[in-house]
Length: 282
Image (tube, rainbow, N blue to C red; front, side, top):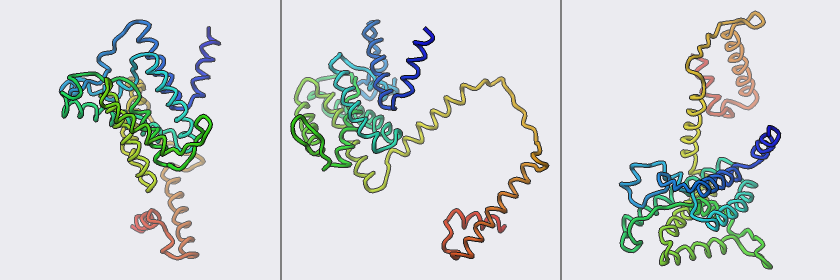
């Protein structure tokens, strides 16, 4: 049993971040169906007033799926798109797009029901990773629109694929899954906007990334025992105190900067080097 558990852990460690999301989705789906759970509190409601009572649902709805085909197609798309994106971009950027796509899809879903309740047919609840997956798909198609991919027996430019999918989502607004297609368009819009901004050198997901990093660090620090107290002692290493080492390092950095000035002039310094030299001069 120990060997089997260790094998599972080793395989999970080898998964990339998007494959781990696939695994989480599959496990949740199996648990939901096996134990006949509804997870109502994790589905995204169509009304803003209901959403205020469970704001976490803007994330959690993307980990729930209606049936086998729903999760199958979403996870297949995520697997193949994920491999393409992670070959070109960092895992954090992929996660930014994925979760921001889910958020934008959820917000457009609720906005649509608020503005056009009669057209969309009363209240509803949203589940599925489609908006997040759409964001990744449209992102890669918008970032490199002329890149060709093999589609059965012929090559297809990515922007053709993106245009076809968006058109289908617009057509879907007149069907029985109007709310779901509205969420797809929200994810697609985020993916397109993210790609166009990134092509100009601006990563619009950095703010979201910092928030997520802060939350993760909070949970990590909470795992430490509050009863444990550590007293740090001032000690010497090789006869020098920590202050001695800091003074030595500062002087060494000043010498390097002064050497750079003598060789290339003051204007060759970076803003950080000029600031350090100014503070050291005080």
